Amino acid sequence: MSSKYLELKPHDFRYPIKIFKYVTTEVNQNNIPIDSKEKLTIKARAAIRNTSGKEIEIADGVSLENKKRFYIRYRKIGFSTQNAKIEYNGSIYDIKSISDVEEAHKVFEIVAELIE
Image (cartoon, rainbow, N blue to C red):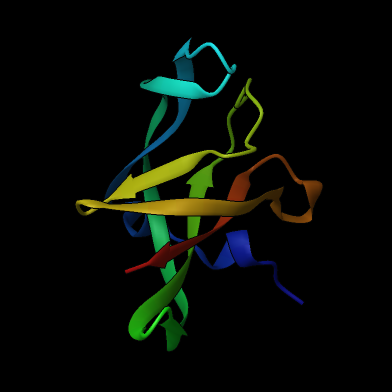
């Protein structure tokens, strides 16, 4: 059985993405964050697979939920991915999980979600 990273060809990694987090720079007197600054962590090229898309109802309106899988070549990330985001094609996706495909240290699979 072949793994997912073996199915990816070099030309599949053609979509530029940016992985980043927001870092709190100021808090008010109640210790609530009032200002945050984008901290760029990684620029990469990714292979992208659409996972699902559906309409959901949120507070008397309809929103679209779009899930994608981003595959990037393995690299040392060096930061916590909690609350990390991906910018792709002008949209910001929330990262749900990052995994090393088959623990082979060749490709990361990043599951991310966009809610519009």
